[in-house]
Image: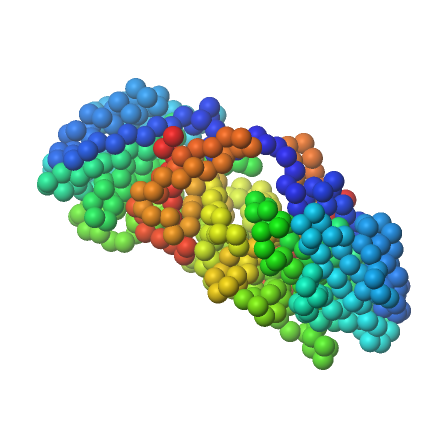
Length: 261
Length: 263
């Protein structure tokens, strides 16, 4: 087998880190700077605006991190056309812990509140389409809106540019069944766990289409709680360690796990 | 890449046959013997009873075909435990109907090309990542278009609608993993570029009252409903290996239809 592009550490290098005992979101900005710019080759065109490397097809996104208060961080995501995809916020406890799941084409910041508060921004892997086929490849979301209200935060819900307008929608593939009497979660009849791609859909010129996969992220059984680490095979003889992040599983039957090792 | 087991003709040899303008199921009873016994390695324990080879987990199915009339065929499916999963019927027209046979080592799908296709199916699933013996209690499926009273009851005409053994009895349910988003909106099985998507047919069953995945159907894929019934499509099943699948006449569920390997 060949490792799929979106899980390939050569094509999509990744990095994980964690801060504990945080008292100020400035620590997030510092850590993100180190992970993204120093480790993963992102750039920082202006202070606290971080830009992914531009890939061979000219794709990138940028995120602007703004400290609202010591415990409140605002993050604005734009696509390569400088169109705002979303502006969202996450908060930390004081003291608080934050985990960072970063890669060349995306970032997930997971604030370990009692209910985890997560921010994500991703350049999707559009394979088997060419990465240059279309511009609908940026997905982003965060736990709170700019009024600090937690709204519509279940797994698989993202802002993307839907038919020309940034729109929040449930976008991930539902890997369960839609029929009664029960949802088939990501497990087999004998209890083996299954893992699936985090693939998202988008409204392209009025038609719903599958847009691509989140890099270094997989869908896992919803019964596995946040913080659990899973080690699925990503190739015939290659495994990866993925850690389940917060977020309500709700109706989607699964949770996200991001690459840690 | 390595060819997925579910498409590996070394694991599950397959074939396709078409009989034109069939007017009497006696023709079918003759030809299915050739397809299953001669070509796919099934056995014929008694008249019109066919048993597929046991896999490494000891799983197999048998099918008993009974000619009710010249135009009415009854098909009974049992698993290796002798449990009857279903007895269903399909019909051909008096004036004659083309009949397609999709047969494999572990499956048999017969399509009577009436205005609305009448399809009979029987199979065991390819259960990876679990072992074949792991799934032996719950991974045989079957269905057909009509009841034994020849009624079209609408429970055997969609991809994924199968009878399977659910804990204590055979039951029919919709079992297919389809192209749906987390808002339960059916999404066309198409990429932004317009390229069509194909996936193995993944099905579930109830185990201790809970729905769980039991594997994939050999030599079959789901596709977008924009592909016409009976259309043939070339699908990549390995890095440089393609296969031809045909859309069979099962009604669309969400945005998906089912294709079975032809070549």
